[in-house]
Each structure stands twice: as C-alpha cells, then as structure tokens.
Amino acid sequence: MHVTKGVIAMDEVGGVWTKTIRTTKLQTPKSLYQFSDFPWPPSLVQNFPTQNQVLEYIQSYAHHHGLLCHIKLNTRVISLSYDGPPEGEMQTWTLWGGTGKPFGPKGKWKVTVQDTGSLYTEVHLVDFVMMCAGKYSDFPNIPEFPPGKGPEVFEGKVIHSMEYSAMDNASAAKLVQGKKVAVIGFQKSGMDISMECTSANGLLQASSNHVLCYTGQNTGICLISCHGEFPWLISIKIAFSELLVHKPGQGILLSLLATFLSPLVMNLTTLFT
Image (cartoon, rainbow, N blue to C red; front, side):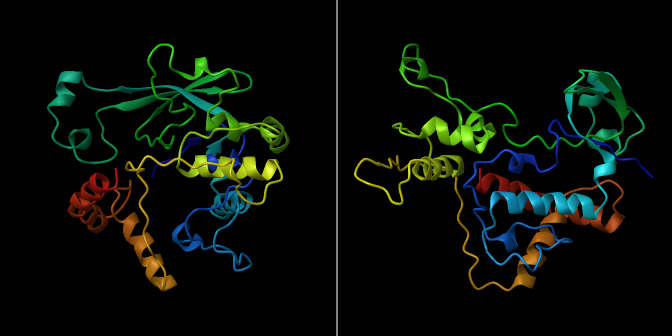
C-alpha cells in the first residue's frame, strides 16, 4: 500500500479554471469533458458550462472522493531530483526504473516544496512522481523577436493572456474599456479575450472597426464532430482512454493492456501535435 500526497501552488483545486476570463465557457460538449466515475449534475442543462460551473464540477469531484485531505494547497515544488544509481547505470536500463515496475527499489525521488506564504521548505523522499503542471504552467509562451521589432516598440500596454486571466473581473474590464485592443492569437484565449473586450465596451456585435486576421496556417485545433452520439458511447470512449495509461497498483491484465495499446498512444500524439 502506498500513501499519495499532492501539492498545489494555488489556494484551491481547479487548475486553469481558477484563473479564467469571466466570459469563458467550455469549448467542448460537457459529455466529452467529464470524469468517467462522476457525471455532471442533472440540474446542469446547458451543453457548454461556464467557467464557474466547470470549477464547481472539478471541486465537487475532489470533495466526493475525499482528495482534499491528501492535497496541500499554497505549496510549490521548487526542486525535483532522482536519488538513485549512477547516471551511467540508469542509461543502460531497458525497462522503467530498471525493473519495469512503477515503484522500483533502486532509488527515490527527492522533492523539495515551499509554502508560498511563509516560504517554509520541506523535503520529501517518494517512490513515484506525477507532474500535472500543464503545457506552460505559470510561464507565458512568448515568441522571440528581432531587436527593435518586439513588444517594446509599441507605445501602449502589452500583456500576455495569462496576466489578463489572473486579473479580477473589475480590473480586467477597466483595462480594456474605451481602448483600441489588438488581440494576437486565434486559439481559445484569444477568442475569449476578444469577446471580453467587446462586452466591456458595450458592443453586441462587431462593426467595421473590428478585424479578425487569419494566416491560414495550421492552428493546431482538432475539431471532432460528436453530434448524434449516444451518451453511453461517449462514456465508453472516456473509459477506454484511461486504459492507455500505466497506473501504480493496477493488475497484470490492465498493465499488459496498457503496454499493448502504447503504439496507439504514440500514433495519436504524433497525429494531433
């Protein structure tokens, strides 16, 4: 039996949904965005829940399964290292951990965490580590520009969508009210911020002063039509996706199944990235 511990740098569970633009809604049908063992509440009738509804759903899942007692909030991981055999020996391994098992006897992970308020640090030695920091975590993805051709040449204010999302609703609305705003980007955050700017300035529809530029390049967005699918079929798809991942403590049958399906995971990753 293994004891599981989790740390979250924020003061509540919910990931990116704790700092989201006010007008943001789920961009996929809710039936495709749910835990297989925890359906959305029947009282939620809309197909695309709001930011607050998604956050409430995720937090309800944590309360329902008693996860909060295993999670330490306001705690950030500041270093992570593997305390085990020499690097040369590990490079010769052909199996995970040298044995193919998730919990190997040859080493430990050294995790240093820090309280975001008191700055008090702790060091934990653990057998297995899962990092759920997201694609960019707290670091904005900003491209590099030639000297003299970047945001510094703009005389107005330049911020990243991550900074905008971190503002409270009143501050965000005040920032864009009565101003000309250029939103660079055509994915989810860009579309949400465009809607936010329109709402903050009392515009119900776009006018001749609103231009949407599209380069024609691959945006990395994959649209999958799910109209007409039965709810039970969607649940089966979600459960099937969970079979593709190795999990500590799973039986030999599930472990073999995840191994046999690993080529499918690599093919899908290559296709949609």
